[in-house]
Length: 443
Image (cartoon, rainbow, N blue to C red; front, side, top):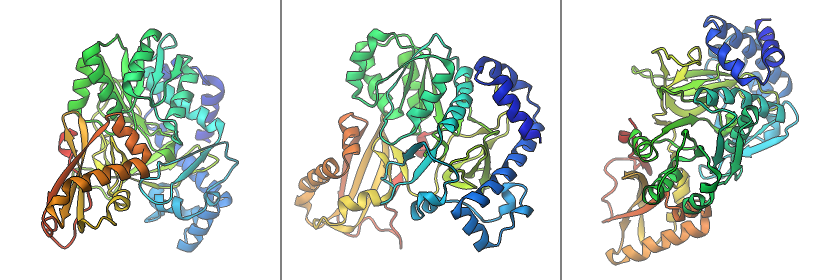
């Protein structure tokens, strides 16, 4: 009943009035949030058990009686995984008619994940996302431009849904070369940028030579960003850089920084977040349940992202919303960087049939200044083949993975090659194929 009353007040009494929502946010009693979450969780659990073939089948296979389930932890070791989304037809998850569809980039596995939404869901998430942007100072009179990649990615539409609520002037530049972006946007007097971190570094290097213009703030998403890089960009543009965190499965929206820049405030009314398998330091895997979706709800979805809840209180208007720490890494070997979303499979199709190298190889993602370098560590059978092998790999990236080659042409990353003798890479029983060596600079 409490959740129904809250939804009525939210949708009917408050509606799309973002300033009013922001003023009321600090007044929400902390004790109310868990009660609303619990009611909404039980409701969505009944909903998927009735409408989703996947969840109905899985609950039956495992012997879950949803009448005995009150909170996500009561489901024990039941989770929904990315592999579930790949291995099962998307129709198995659908509980309503889809109107919007998105998918992952496809570089982490042979099959992309598809996620569907309704336009109403997108509008509601935009309304809630608008509060986070309002909290950062975005107002109707501001002029916004975004340089997000619109290919199957829902982050640009998340932004659009939020800006529709705020009523800002907005131009979509999409992911064009930073130099072209710089030339074309100066006349618009944009004062807020929404961009990806690697792309932003290249734009900043151009602006360092040719000059910046006044900005209220810059908002980034899609990749992690080191604090050193954030400080570099902020110093050049003389403004704040804020970060958002999301996944395709959440319409690109899980949490957003506030002016304090100490963690991502989570929308607890629409996401039930857990940290599972946590270590002594509190870090573990983020698992979430969508509480307000009707087209494709997800129950205890394993994000594979490693983070923790922050305990210290926040002083911004969203202080009643819990915060997640900056993402420390991933459980799997997927790495988000300037080349794209990478996995060992990504490089197998580049390297496995090269006769000049052995079957032992490794790719490291390292930080060189403000750019990522993708370093191929290869065991050469013939030392004279080093340069030809490097050229073949670059050509294969250009021909087989055009999105990554486009990022290379945009100078979002560099290639690196380190050649060694056969047997030099394997020091133990297993050789880790992909390693992210930037972690030490994220703090």
